[in-house]
Image (cartoon, rainbow, N blue to C red; front, side, top):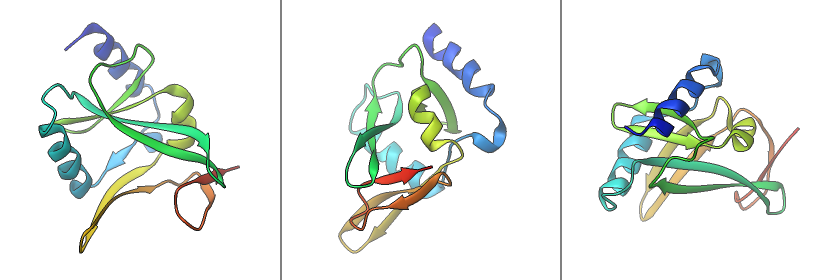
Amino acid sequence: MSSALETTLDTATDVPPGDHLRATDRAVQHILGQMQTDPEAIGFRIEVKRTGCSGWMYVVDLVHEARSDDLVFRVDDQLNIHVDPQSFEFVRGMEIDFKAEGLTRQIIFNNPNVTAACGCGESFSVD
């Protein structure tokens, strides 16, 4: 483990337990499956960017290298979720789920901070 990752793990442990990010078993298995296609991936990143009709949008990606300011949450023995401090203010306490129906596969963000979402589900707002 790199020293940058160790530092961010310590930072994430300073976050109150109720504010930690969580992931369902379905989400963990889906993300780990995605990571298996990229052997250099060390985790999963969630960022929040200003966009869309409601103001904010989730941007997700596989992590190849931890950033020095990442908050890292171990949601499973094999999976770390990385979040930058600015995005964390929007996602604290969020649960990540995964839904598969027919041909549709979708990561679901159960975010207690969201006060409204656009009709297409692409963006959200917070107070």
